[in-house]
Structures are given as structure tokens and as C-alpha cells.
Length: 265
Image 1 (tube, helix red, strand yellow):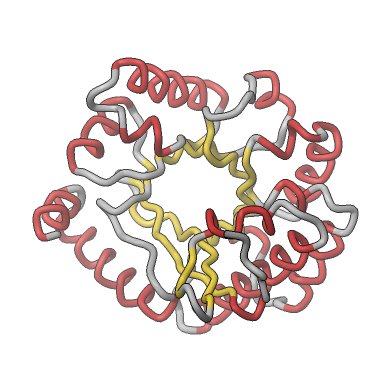
Image 2: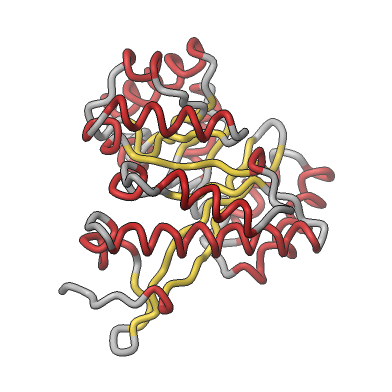
């Protein structure tokens, strides 16, 4: 069912991203839609709007502003987090994207660009590689990091990784979920981790839901991850308390934190 989308109905939840060696890396902003009849909807329910101009730009600008506003608020509270923001291919390639980004940063001067990660899927470079590359280079020059989301599900090649200013590869959850029982998924994840390491890129595994997956990813050499085994997406007001809990437990227990949290869930 197509949703008649009002950007005033949009809000964000946030999911922590952690590294098993160094601790909390930051959070990913995840957009939600509060529909008057259907309740809270995930992006899959309004995907057409995310990929359709000019609605994609309206949504993108709204998400940018909400994410930067929340980052600024947390920083005032003493909670300094890297913020990952998903950018649709349609908005990224919009002629006004760079202006939209600069305007968002100008409205929030206390948010350093170095604290932001822009997440794009492999779709954007496929649509217009040179344009995507130029835009991402501009973002990199501002100090932002670039993350390739759902990596492995599209047609990205190692040549792309040589030419794009990418810093992070996010391994798609479909491979992570099959890592224990499917040798091909295991091989794909291992290959992505090895390739990223050789290219000097960070890898983050998405959809990590069990302790066994955590241990297998550690054995492969992937130490950064997000998923229900670490934390579910949560409202912004819940993040500072979760960060305090995580950091206290991390300092005291280090890696056993994960097994204890999983056992309690």
C-alpha cells in the first residue's frame, strides 16, 4: 500500500554500532513514519517515496535536520557520538544535495562534520558513478566519512572501492544471518572482511542477532557490528542511559558484556 507521506510524520530511532576491541562507535539514524491509521511504519512501507523525486529530497532534508538536531542535543548533554545518516540514491544525485547538506550543517554549527557518516547503498554509484564520486569527494573534504550500506547485494566491484571515497563497508544482514549455516555466506563475509582490511577500510556487520554470530564474526576478523544482540533501535531519549550502561559494563567486563546481555535477553 502506498503511503501519502507527510514529512511531519517522520521521526528517528537510533541503533548503536560497537567495536568489540574499542567499544562504542556511534549510532545509526533509522527513519520511521507515524501513520494515523497504520501506526509506526518502517522504511520498506514507504520505499517508493524514498526513491521518488522530489519527495526523496524532502525526506532527505528532514532526516538530515532531525539527525543533526539530535546530535547537537546529545553533545550538549555530554554524549558525543558518531552519527550515521542514510542518504537515498535519489537525494544524493539531486543537483541540490550539496546545498542541502551545507544548509543543514550551517543550521547546526556545533555539530562537527567529522562526527557524521553518510551511508549510501551501491545503487547510487550504479546510476551515475562520476556524479556520485564527485559528490562524495565533496563530503569527504568536509570531514565526513562515507559508508557503503548493504554491501555485497549489488554490483559494486573492487574497482569502485578504488575510486570511491569510501571508508566503511557495511556487510548486508542477509549474509550475516547465514554465516553459521551456509558456507557460501561465510565465504562472502570472510572475503569482504579480508578485502576491506587490505584496502584500509572498516567493516561493520549488520543484523547481528546472536552470540554465536558475534563469535564467528570475531574469528573472521570483523569486530564492528550492530544488531539485536547488541541493542535494538531505540528512541533518542533512551540513548544516553544506554551509552552510560554500555561504557560502565565495557570498562568492567570488556567482551563478556555481549554474552551476559544476550543471556539476559
